[in-house]
Image 1: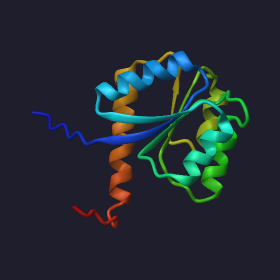
Image 2: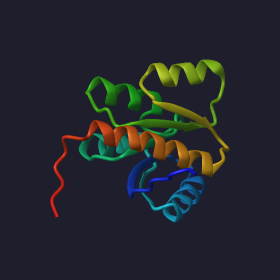
Image 3: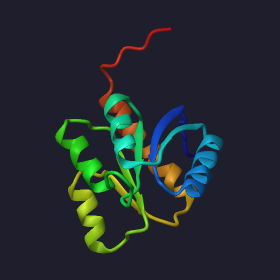
Image 4: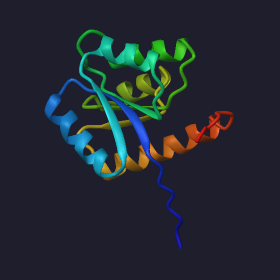
Length: 138
């Protein structure tokens, strides 16, 4: 028997391809994962700095500020939200660079959305463990 724990999550998706972003957002909504979308790198960066998300999904090639720089800046500023790079850049050099600059995971496009959801949930669970001091009021 396998125990699967589901909890509602809210992710930040920073992706400039609107059609892909809408497809990902719809799929995630069907998996009880809310998404906030930003299509410009600088807007996504500010959203990540000013708000708390369970996971950030980040493209590399973005207008305004690229995903590597967003990731690097978030880590320098102490933001420890899990980051999944979701990008068409899939060379070994790209993957190493993304992970070295602070990404927790790296997927290349196109990807299997079921795998993306599984990775989001896995990182979200780890992040929940780190938030154990957070107070919940009902």
